[in-house]
Image 1 (cartoon, helix red, strand yellow):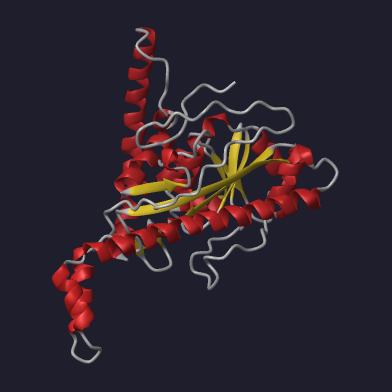
Image 2 (image 1 turned 90 degrees about the horizontal axis):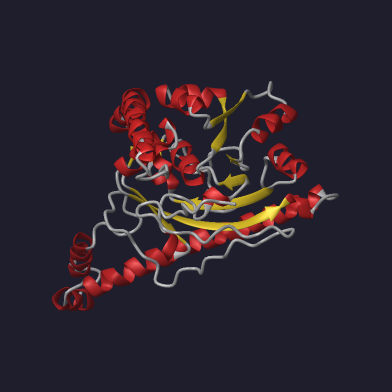
Length: 349
């Protein structure tokens, strides 16, 4: 718990100032580079002070994301720069407020108290226009819709609460954020669903734990065009729920496949001597337990270990579902993976 408190103080009160100063210097260099015609592209991590801060946080905490498309592994949702609409994500812990807005490269809807609790990092997010602030019981749905309309893309948590500590935390539930879904439907925009597993492994305020090596698993579904359901909100809501459940199942299957692949790797890593001990041992003589301990020490860092350092690769990953075109719209350009990020930097039309 003490390590978690110190870490959060550092990243919420100290590093934001460093991020702001560094971002100003980087932007100056980018302006000079543009004047000299060296480059005109602004990296995503340099788009705002908040993006730089979030990028540092994720790399500093050893966060890696395994996408259902192996070619798109990285912190950014593939092709996210070309998406216009609402990004719906699952909510696990406080760490989500860093990893998810960075994944979606967008503003996030959150309560005023949540941004205040983030200290200077929260203020940095507000100044960077990465925060859509609501006050429970005071902000109307219409007011929220007007704030969201200012953004090309924004993200919401339709579960409305952090679920990592709940008994059914790894099971999908009926989405509760009816107001948010209705705003999407009334605005006739698209909804992209992104389910990311293991986010509570970065920080977990309920258990007081923190990790500096966490592998996340991501699946995507959609986008679903609200314009395809002009007269039936319930049908749109049902389509979103069905897509949410499918994405959820694929994301957790991706983690399961990685765990099984890691387990097979553990068995293969066991030496012949260790295997003979395991086969010959009986429950009462302790030799089987000894062999299990030898294997555990040899394979420490497998998926599920909080101190994992190895990045598991699923043996049979789910094939990436291409962005579908809807209502006659053209598809976004193909994603061009950027090292460490995995999202497209091709200009969108």
